[in-house]
Image (cartoon, rainbow, N blue to C red; front, side, top):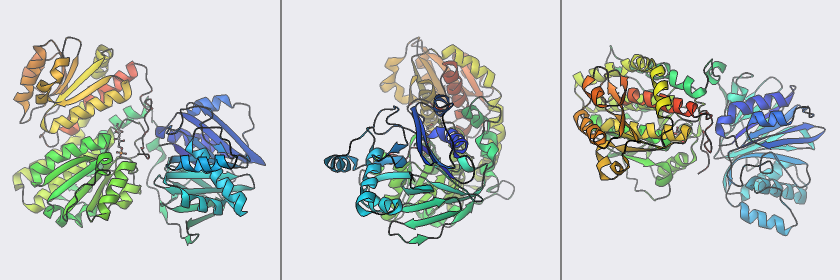
Length: 611
Ligand code: F6R
């Protein structure tokens, strides 16, 4: 949450920073600000999105070759000009941006108030900045030294970037618990919450680790730990092309990402799934395959959409591998002193690889001896690094705040892991195994087919966009798909939507059904099909409007529904990768029809790096 950008080098810093902030706006967009070094510090900031700041500062002096910029997702203090970053210290000589939460800021603030400090904002950031300034003043030390001393007193999570008017070409950066990437150019350096702001300038990057501090100048990058010892930066080469983070002709990133799914699922399977040879090769899992096979229990830990992927995987692992699976919200798991037994395997699922709750949950479990496998999209992210092993989802950058292609890629990876383990463990017979490998390999083409119904779904969106509530129902493998469909709709159209297991509807939600309630039922051909059809009848008997996701050729079910969304027939194990796609499109088109910014829904941020 919050996007941070920094630049120092021969270029004008402002255009680099503004472009970078636009790329990072998926992380937060409550307010925006930049600080530039140009003889003195110049700070411009404003409530609202990056474009609003740009408009507000037309004609101002924006020169400077070193600068920092921020796009905020509010934690302490409402979105406002005063609470926007960068903050300036009391003397006006330091400027700082921050992503994270300083948990003991109240105590630090009181100490500073006692010393006569006054604050212009309600943020924890301004407190930390003045705390650093106070140390610098008292200890007569450099900014770098003051930051080091201050951070030893701080609890919480942070990435901070600081400018000091007395060191005009230097950016001091530090991280704990939030992501920070430094790009290395020729005589210049770039800083960002992820690599997207620097992608067009350099492919060489350093991922800064927790408790590291960076002193960044145009032609020098020094990394140190908080004990002031130098660390050799580990330079990695990025494997992302610029096109992957641009809209490429689509109206929104979300639509682009929905349409990328045939490719992203294919990329995820490529090189791993060999249908002819009957093998699945996953090098990051192989080393731990034995432990997974012998596991008494697998615990899937995730949040949001990734948690829904974990729920689908629970059905798949239990069915194919005969291993007990539990699916946990990371935020609950981390605080409830869970029992971790020897032989437990944890699978952490995360698109960003930075979700704070998931990260801490697996760190705790790791400390108690669990094997951690990560199913992560962002290469080099914190969760990927903390995990013992795992598999990347290779879906490419996901920029739309509502997750789409990451979900189907997670399902593809988790299905492959389950199939591999089931095969090695002998809990699946050869015919079923070969059948499922083939089914998996056909998913990309079948998703392509689903996408062809986009115009029909757009029309449906017009028809239902004014509904006040939606109910989403599904059973078995499609129950988590119903949850995911409801989440997508809530996120981007702000319509209240509930996902429920179809049979459970009778135990409460059926009271909501009347002629005004659209009920989306995932009713593809699987072992539960007839039962779900009965649930549809129950809704129709109460005059509910049924929009059903059905399998191609299922005219009987189509006949009893108000509207249908058709997907190709598929084995129930892979069906969620197909049935979720029309629900993504339905949510997208309803969000657009209601005139909302679907890529940046209100109050949300893509990467939730605060708990
Ligand atoms: C929903 C969505 C969120 C994320 C959740 C976990 O569309 O994007 O619910 O799924 O914040 O994020 P990751 O997967 O990055 O850990």
